[in-house]
Length: 228
Image (cartoon, rainbow, N blue to C red; front, side, top):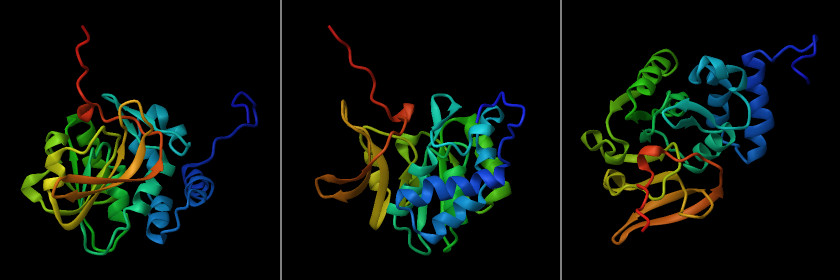
């Protein structure tokens, strides 16, 4: 509908949230009841800048500033689905941003211990406030994303909320036995795929799971090469 139409009225957030789940999340092969319930309950509009709240439930990633984005809902839902989260696991969100993904994990219940790592102070302050209200059990850590959270490791699951060329070795070292990483991997010149990454004696094994247009995490993007 044309927003200039005098009869136009935007959906209220609760209705928009339910429509997001029914029109975007469930058709994207997301059937985990805990994921669906958390995405129905959590106010995504409060995790984006006020000027973008009318678009909080649209099927696109939204800019948060500092080159960072809130990942498209469909991709977030599928990432949580393919992570195959088990009760009682310790989970680290790398790129905690404004707290939405960490709060979803906390909202899934199952006794998860969720930690969010963020390097941008402004985003971390927003994320802490968001989680304090909606997911008070989430722990926040400040520091470089590339270094992970060695002090609180090991983790059963590390979820990287943003695309990377490859997973930093420090994150692999912070996995518990049998642990895994879920991250969007964007090879140079290739297509970004949300992937399952497992440690191996040689480094890591990467299993692409599904393609997704996920913005790069600037901090973990490779430095530009000199061209002579």
